[in-house]
Structure formats: C-alpha cells, structure tokens
Length: 90
Image (cartoon, rainbow, N blue to C red; front, top):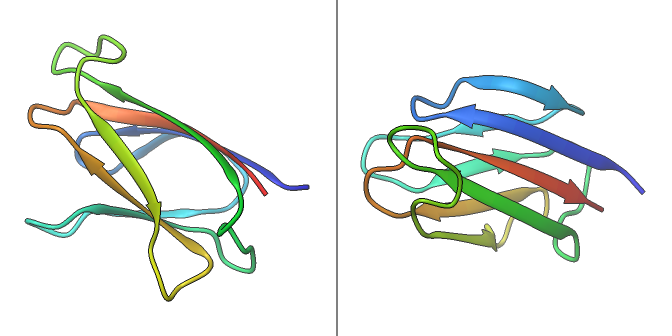
C-alpha cells in the first residue's frame, strides 16, 4: 500500500507533501493530481477544501478518477476555494 498526502493552496502550490505527485489546475478547468506509477482507480481518498480565510470545509469538493488515466485523480471544488488537503491510500 502507498500513502500520499498533500496540502495545496489556491494557486496549486504544494505546501506539504508525502509521496510523489503532481498537481495541475489549468485556467477554467478542474484540478488534477497525477500519481506516476500508481493505479488510483480503487484508492481510498479523503479530501477537504479550504475557504477563502483557510477555514476547513468551507466549500464543496468532488473527487473522481480521471478516466481513462488510471494514475490521475480529478477534483471539482466549489466557488471561493482557498485550497485543499487530501490523503490517498492505494
């Protein structure tokens, strides 16, 4: 089992990390987290958004496998997001 954890700000900068992953947030698109070499299709995922003042759980979040890629998760965050944290267990 591999465990990944991350703390990401609103601009996509990784503040804290455990494990190797890449975060991308193209303008107007959803967030993606890429885990090179790992299949995350059946992973346990816990994700928590931050509000504008960095309070936890202030906005909505949805996490999904970014098909057909098996090593990438996608995230949709509600308006006014200030960042998010996540934990992934494969």
